[in-house]
Length: 208
Image 1: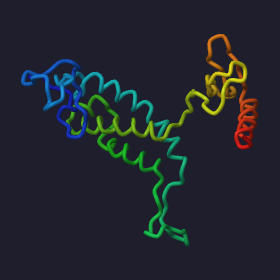
Image 2: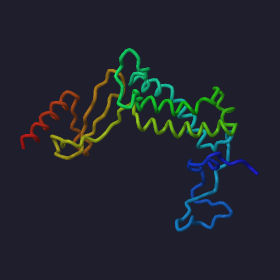
Image 3: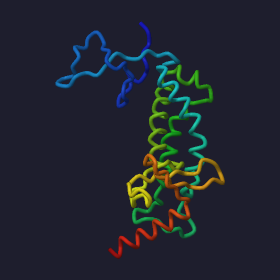
Image 4: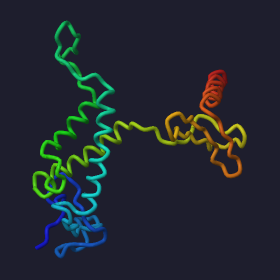
């Protein structure tokens, strides 16, 4: 019998299965709900399916840079000596960034640097899955890069549509752009002009 992705044997972790395909003892239903697919994906790299393996490599590659940045956002927790004020409970609150790093790296304790060997052991493969899941949560909870997003506070000055897009700098030294994405308009502001327009719009709203 071939091995299946270890996620299928881990409590509290969504199993990796083929959508629309079912195990031999499945009738297509899970109680009153239709089963969307329960045929386990095979273990193709150690005890991980190919999807989990590629996901793990991606997260491992991204983690050191991310952890280094968010680890420096808040000062490391220190003992309450030399008169440092604490909370009423008598401890210094641990920053959420530090908690995220500690939680994720607790699953890296079984990782010796050989990824193939890591995911070939049951304990290592389980830690690899949990590290991947928790690191993704940390990436979402503590974003370190700004993304392009719609400006919702005011409309384009030229076409009067609510269609301005804030675009972060692509490279070091570049400037922020605010650009209308309405077809045929292409109105554009630099960061300074955008801040002036935003301030004027805010004052107008207050005085309205």
